[in-house]
Structures are given as C-alpha cells and as structure tokens.
Length: 262
Length: 256
Image 1 (cartoon, chains in turn red, blue):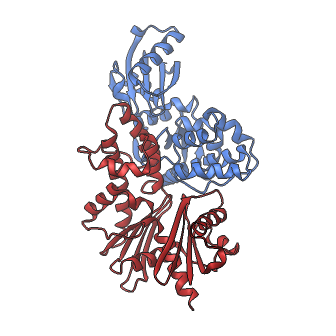
Image 2 (tube, each protein chain N blue to C red; image 1 turned 30 degrees about the vertical axis):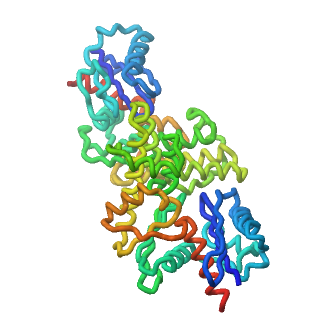
Image 3 (cartoon, each protein chain N blue to C red; image 1 turned 60 degrees about the vertical axis):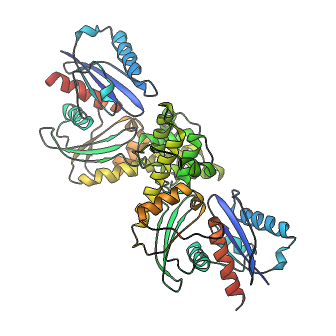
C-alpha cells in the first residue's frame, strides 16, 4: 500500500511516496505561482517517473504553504502543519534527534522534540530575510555563484570577509562593494556563510538547545553554514540519510501511513 | 561669514552654503562609486552656479557616513548634532526631530537650548529607510521621485504586511499580479515606511513640537501618515528636508 506526502514551500515543492518498506521515490522542484499547481506538478512528476497514477496512492497528507487548498483540490486526504511533519520526519529518520534546525527559503524554524518525538518547543523567524535561504539566494546572485557552489567554495577560504551588516539589503551592498574592491569570491562566500550561520544561531539560542541537533531544509545542504553552526553550537549535527530538503514531505508521508492505516 | 556644510549619506551627498542666516547655494548628487571625486564635483558645481569663489568659504564642515572623505573639511560633525542644530535654528520650541535617511531612522529629543538629550537610532534594518523605498520602486520600475505623485492618486492603501524589505519586494509583485493599482501599492509602501518612523518617534512620546528631516520626508505621502499617527505639533522643515544635516553642518561651521 502506498502513502504520500506533499510539501509546498515558498521556493520549492517536494513529494515523497513510501510503503511499509520505506521511501519508494521522491521529487523536488521550484514552485509555480500557485501552490495547488505546484503540488499537482511535483506529485505528477513523481507518479509518472514510477509509472503510477493518483489512484494508486492509498492516503496522502499535504503540508506547507497552501496545504488546506491542496487537500480541498482532492490531492490529499488530510493536511498537517509543517512543524508536525518536520518533527515526525526527522524523528523517524533518527530517534536521537531533539532539536531540529529547519532553514527554508523564506523562514527559519527551530523545533524541539521530547524523547517520544512529540513537539516540546518551537521558534520561528519569518519576519526578516536574514538567516533564511532567501538571504543566501540574494548573496549568490551578487557573487555570481549558485546555491550549490557557495558552500563548498568557501571551505578553502583562509580569511573570511566579515560582514558588518545584518539586513539582507545592506549586506548585498556590502558584498558588491567588497567585490569592487577586489576581495576574492572565496573569502566573500565564507563571510556570507558565516553571517548566515550567526543569524541562525541567534534564533536557535531562543530555545535551550538539546542534543542531538539535526539540520533540515534546503540550507542544510550548505556544508559551510552547517560546519559554522556546529562550531558555534559546539555540537556535531546528526546526519540525515535522506535528502534534508524532503524531510517535511517525508514526515507528511509517514503521517499519511499512520493515519491511513487507522 | 560664508560656511559650507557637506552631508555624505549612503544614497546621496548634499551640500549647503550659508552666508550668515541665509542659504545661498545648495545641491544634491547620488553617492555611487568614487565618492571623493563626486564630492569635489558637487561642491565645485554648487559654488560655480552660485558665483561664489572657493576662497570665500571660511569653514567647511562635513557630516554623514562618508564625512571623512571630504578632504578640505575644517572639521567633522556628527549627523545627529547637525540635524538638531538645523531644526533648532528654524523651528521655535522644537523638542524632537526624526531624521529618515537612506539607511537609517534617527529620532532625537532636544532641550530648550537645542542640545540633544536622547536619541533612538535604527541602522540595522532597511525597513522604513530610503533603501526600502528604493528597493520597492526599483522592483516596480518606478523612479524614486515618482513615488509621491503616484501615491497621491491612491484612494485606498494596499497593506504591505511584510516589514522586511526583501519579503516586501516579493509581496509588491504579488499585489501587481493580483491586479492592484500602482498608486494604491505605493500608498501602502509609504504607509509601511511611515509606520516604522512612527514606532521610533513614539519612544519620545512626550515631544510636543517636532519636525521631520532627511530625504524620505520629501515624500508627502509618508509625512502625512506619520503626522496622522504621532501626537504633538508638526512643524515642516522650512527648506528641503533632505538638506537638513548639510544646513546644520554649515550653521555649526559659523558658530565654532
């Protein structure tokens, strides 16, 4: 029996299909203007890839932006908040996890779980772009590198350029200014990742960090931000065996499995 | 005595030349790349237009972020001191000035002698600053000078719910896609800036007579919203409010 999760975020949408043996397939794409279209497209691509149809899915949970609408359109039987989906996905992935740092395209969340994987505390920043994936996206554009490149390239920096601003708009100007002055892209990338990590740590410190910590969301793939966070928090992050960007959709699919079996 | 005040901001450089109590020349130029030569060209141009010989300037005072780049300045003065000096010079009983610059909002309270007694400064976040307006107008392909005439045509504000300039950029595009009209969107953008300013001004809620300075306060749609929400009596700065710090610098040059 197949269960599915659909997670439409602000920048990307993910779909996961699993059965009792685990994940069968997943798909990720940049969002379309309408969350319902994004949900339809991302799951459609996955089903096509697997030679499946919508009717093959026994129970589906939608989460993220527009999750209610996705359910109303009949693509899911139930919708569950992204916090619950994220928590459940990360906990299933590794039972040791107590703190989840989820950095998405337009917000950053810290989710704390108790020993049973239930929500214990939660803080979020969706007011300021600094410390979200959007910040990195702007800086990558200014530097002329891709989101995939900015992490690895900065590891070879010996002298990260310190950003004196916090606001994304001001840091963007600062980066352009440094480029004009001839600073290397490698040192700038390192400085940007450091500035990013500093904003995330400020959020994380609003809850009492309990080990162990797992990073999820697209920014978790940035090795430099991840290492900097580990250094600042004094802990080693748990590795997620599955793509950290699909944890939300994975959690949704797992919850679909639990709910659908009732 | 002829003095020259030079305010080097993050977006614009401003120059004011004063002969005693009178402003005899002034000018503004965008601050872009080579600031040092831009300042020199600006000062030379302003003096030439006014027919003033450089040798007649008795004192040049620099202020603003880039004050140190003004090579022939007699001294450098803090921007807050300059704004307060200009406000005190023109406005009786003024006890608060809010200066909205390219990258900051500063609210300052003053005593009866025009001395700054307290100030609140926000330069951490672009919300409410000139940069916020610049980002929105760039996103919507509108000149910054067209914001005010556009917003004035609005009959309803479109609420901008994001404070963050980066998020607000996406939001205004969504409003355009939803068929909202540009005047209404800009009215909402002006209200958003005004609300940030009001939040700063309310830190000095006892102020009875205030003025507004800085380039952003050239925009009437912003000023109107601020005045509708702040208590106390508003006194318009009697000259281009964008020049306030430069005028204050020139005034301080004459007294010191």
